[in-house]
Length: 136
Image 1: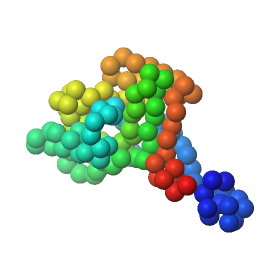
Image 2: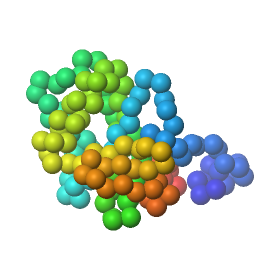
Image 3: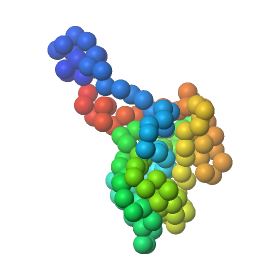
Image 4: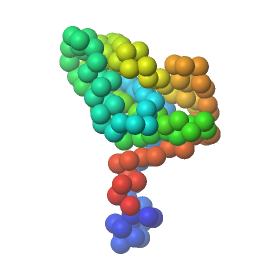
């Protein structure tokens, strides 16, 4: 009960801290990108999702999902959720990552699997939920 409202109410208010990609959500895919350590996360997200010219995605959208994972090697990966034209968004993000030389990762069977070959158990990673942690 770190949040002011939880202290006032005396009970947790039920904000879910599920790591994106660990639970299947119909119509949404999740991917993580490696933080470059130099630019703001929003700027990296924009560069990654707007790299493809022309874009392949014809509908839907992509958003930062408010979760990051710090891997045991110290690198940080941020979650992106996308919907609509899944194949188009997947292609746009993969093309952006290749062009920006940024590793992508997916959650698979309790592990984070990066495109550069790194694999870690989720239990070895430190999650941060920006949309919750910023409220405390």
